[in-house]
Image (cartoon, rainbow, N blue to C red; front, side):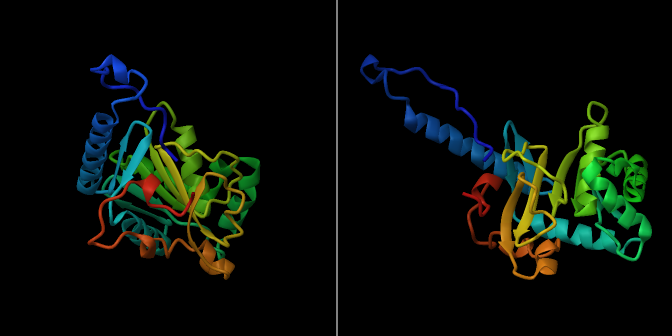
Length: 231
């Protein structure tokens, strides 16, 4: 998904092989890049590392995000900060301000909603934050914040169950989205990668269940592009 064109790093030693790329050396180079990327992802608190057009994701990435979102939902202001990451919860159906914010999403006016106000206040209070993780309304909020702060503050975004309409199928390293199959809320998000699913729409839209699809502890490290259900 994130792979792009590869440059030729070595010249051919033998003119007879001019038509064939030095695949063995290129393979070794890519293997080293993959290993180094995964090493840095494993060492990072947020379990990710971006190198060029590839995001490397280590084990524990989804579990950390799930726990962060759980704490955000439990917080009075629906946000939670852990190190360099701010987590933003989705809609509280008992709060009319969230329901109004939901109605703003199709019109690209999320920045005028109460959840945006809460999340931006937390962001300003935590200058160390470089990553935003949001679910549902929270995903629309982090996307709006990233857009508003573009050029002023570099922010990486991880979204779950996005309610936004996205036609692209090529997410960038600074923005990645996930969804469960069967989720009607995120059904129009063309940038999301499908991981797991449920016939129950409430279960399918939940931010939980992604950690269950992570690699087991004894599995080899994989990058994001190699560890998802999309073909």
